Image 1 (tube, rainbow, N blue to C red):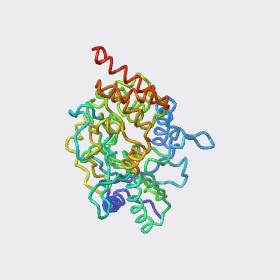
Image 2: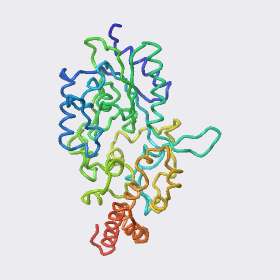
Image 3: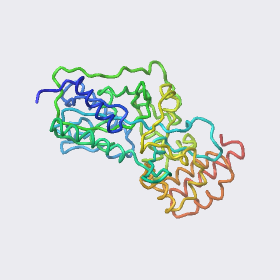
Length: 379
């Protein structure tokens, strides 16, 4: 088959993606690491990993038998890959921003984890996970590709050996903002990405339909990051990011980050909350991305008091499930300490004498933090 012209192919892909429930989509050719664009991407990713900015996320550091990082180029793991279809869905929940005033003693759960769907015949929303929601939609686009082109394909949602945001930028889905998120002029940055790697060739000499960078001189995201995770425009040190610390980080969280974590108990939205492009971002209305109101500014006491059964009832099948109860409680303990509220002392004292060493240490720190606030030297 002759190479496909992106302009015509992209229009067809966007139609199929919209039918499957995506908000936008695009196509980008795969550049081998021997090409100039491919070599630049590979070197940038390798430098990022070597600098320790992947933290404990070992899946980002995996290499092939030749020692090459799998995510340094799509063709490293899939030599047959010739193009990537990138599909994006809006997850902007119907609720306030994390930087807006909230009730005392409340925590913050990242916007994408508010997601729920309405079961058939039911009214109350049940937990949903964007991985499952998006993979089902990608399969529909993939089936259309097979029917039309008979090509080889592979679908991924956060699990593939590629850097999705780099592919999204090349596919014209959006530009990479200074907060390292993909930004779309119409949708903002509340975007979840899924990709379909294909064996379809792009026509030789075809130019990319790359979105213009519209961040300008704005640095609000960089200035607002509490832990200075945005070390440079468009480059994040994940090991300092609150989302990484509350979700991916196992064991104790370094004390240098705890006060800066504030009330975040799962993820962080601050760098997106302050972004001007998100002021008019549309609210997600599709099934699987509906807002579960109980998860917006949740009471720390409620989260702390959950036993295993209640944790499963509220979070089984949601992104929060993978953090597990113990890690969530660790985060809640730190948020309680940062609240400075004496009413949390009994719960923290109970945790401080428990068998979970990480939770006990976090609770002891929180107790000291509350005492410091009461004495006027903890702020």
